[in-house]
Length: 63
Image (cartoon, rainbow, N blue to C red; front, top):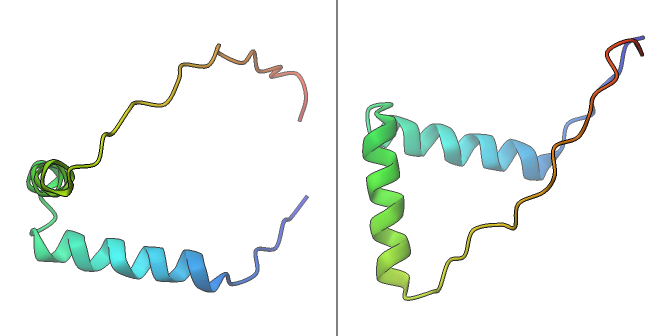
């Protein structure tokens, strides 16, 4: 079964921003994370991790 994906301007914008950020930091993931953590710290917002969810069992026999 083929699923056609239609262009989503919001998703396209996110991809463009992500590409610009990656290029800005020379595609260095550690540098990107350091920058994001610094921005998070500077913002003063409290950031809490998402609650854990139980793992879902995947039935591999269904295709």
